[in-house]
Amino acid sequence: MALVTAAIAAAPAIAADVPAYGPNLESFDYPHPVERFDFQSQQQTLSMAYMDVKPQTPNGHTVVLLHGKNFCGATWEGTIKPLSEAGYRVIVPDQIGFCKSTKPKAYQYSLQQLAANTHALTEKLGAGRIILMGHSMGGMLAMRYALMYPDQLEALALVDPIGLEDWKARGVPFQTVDDWYKGELNTSYDRIKNYQLHTYYVGQWRPEYDRWVKMLAGMYAGEGRELVAWNQALTYDMVFTQPVVYELGNIKVPTVLFIGAKDNTAIGKNLAPPEARTSLGNYAALGPETAKRIPGAKLVMFEDLGHSPQIQDPDRFNAALLENLKALVRP
Image (cartoon, rainbow, N blue to C red; front, side, top):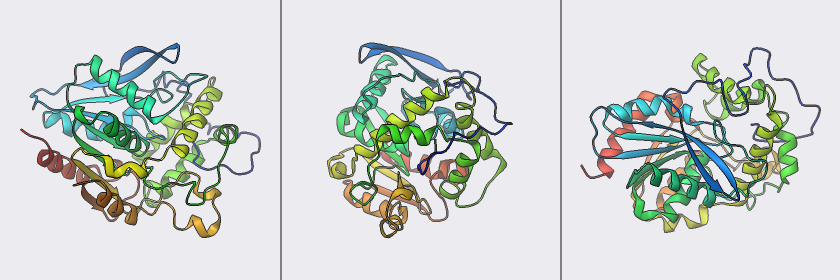
């Protein structure tokens, strides 16, 4: 899942100590039981994996957590527990094309389609009105969902969402899906870890992060890696060509943004000319700009954290999350 492509050589081998989890993470354990939602989409049967964690003492609210592009439902592990303990029902899907869900050979990916798939899941589960929280690509998807289904949402929470700037308009050259695919075939444990080190964790690595690197690399470590790479290429094209930044002012749902100010995520940034590259992915500026553009949005900045504040400092993130959710939703 390398975020940039350069000259393509022979695909490197995944590190020897990375388990072959399978293209659908068949042998990777999630923190809660995984259920399946089978449905018809684009003339084929697809299966969406999800966790549905019900609290011992319900508070009457449901939170749906949307993972990022280089993440899975399992990476919300540290957020699911405190939400459940606070009384929230927590639903955590893997989007089609990702992780434990179906990876079609052919699919017209769009943020609208993924939002419609997720909406169908919440309808099937009888979730009613929900609090929607998305991280990274999941934040981009959550914004699209809020534009499509505003009446279903109690609140919107965005954690370092991508799509806060139009990368192509800012100087990142277009790549074909075939080019993205070639880059994805070069995915390795070392590449994933190096990217995460400098973008997610501000140059500070902890042993517990290795699990998430191995999770991603493990999908490429055996048979089926080409299908994983192809779906990743298709979804890179999706996020690159479907910015939501121009529609932020149309979001009418109570919104809170959680932003790691050290985040520097920008799809294809290393392909941009040097003069454009340095200005891309500046979340210290993008966070406040976005909060101003979404009517009534509240901004929570973590000045020392990167792209994944919920993983980098879960205690601080969860405390801020619970406090802000309590303020956003009715008892």
